[in-house]
Length: 392
Image: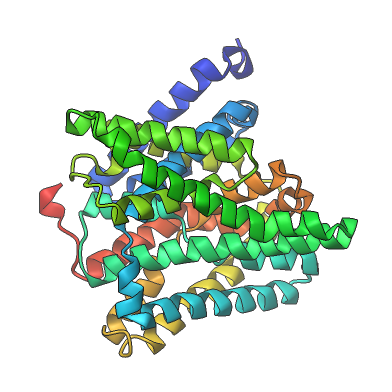
C-alpha cells in the first residue's frame, strides 16, 4: 500500500506524531526550539515527496490560517498601542527598519537578476516577521523583559507593514495588467481597512460572549471559536484573516478582556495546531531549485538581518535601551517563514498569480529561516537575560 493510498486522514496524524516526537527530543536534548524540529520534519517530508499530495487540500490551508490566526490574536493581545505614543522611537524603528529592509532586499535581488515584479514581492514579504515562531519561542522560554516587549511590538508592526506593502504591490499589478483602478484599490487599501474593521468588530462583540463563560477553559474555547469564525468570514469575503486576527487581539486588550496565563497559547489546542502549522509550512516548500537559490537566500538573509540590526542599534539610545539590546532585538526578528507562506497562499487564492511564481525565487531564504530563524530568536532572548528556563 502506497503513502498516497493512506490518504490525508492517516498521513497527517503520522506526520504530526513524527514532528512532535522530533520536537520533544530536540528540545530535551539540545534545547533547540521545538518549532525548528517541526519545520525540519516538514521539509524532509516534502523533500522525499511524502507530504506534497496531502498538503494540497483546501481544508488544510484553512486550518493553517486558523492556527496562525490564533497566534496573531494572542500577539495582538500582547500589544499596547499606548507604548508607541509614550515611546515614539519604537514606532520610528519599526517604520524605518521596514523601509530599509524593503530597499535592501529589492537592491540585493536585483544584483541576482531577479525581475522587477518578483523583487517587489520579495521585498514586501521580507519586511514580515513570523508571529508563530516568535510566540512559540517566547512561551518555551517564558521570556519577559525589554527585548521581549520590543520583539512583540515590532513583530506586529512588521506584519502590518508587510501586508500593506504586498497589497500595494498587488494593486499595482492589477492596475498594470487590467487597467482597472477600482480592482487595484480593492486589492490594496480596501482589503486592509475592511480586515481591520472586521477584527475590531469581533473585539467589541467578544466581551458579550465572554460573559457566558464559566471557567478559564470555556473562555479559551470562546475565543478560539471566535477566531475560527473570523477566519472563515475573512476568507469568504476575500479579506486578510491574518490582519483581522491581529486587530481582534488588539481591540480585545483595549476592551479589558482578561486572559489568564493558562489561556495564553490556547493550551493543548494551541500546541497541537503549532505542530500542524510548522509541518504544513515545511511541506509547502519545494526542494526543486533549492541549491540554485541558496546563495540568493543567504544574501537576502544578510540584507534583511542587517537592516533590522542597523536600525535597532542606531535608535537604541533614543528609544531607551542599550546598543546590545538593540542588536539582540534586531536578530530576534529573524523568523518569517510561516507568515510569509500563508500570505503568499492567500494572495494566490485571491487572484494574484505572481504570488505563486515568486515562491521558487525565495525558497532558499525560507528553507534557511524555517530551520534557523526560531533558534536565533531563542539565542537572542537568552543572551538578553530574559529567559526563565527553571519555570519550564
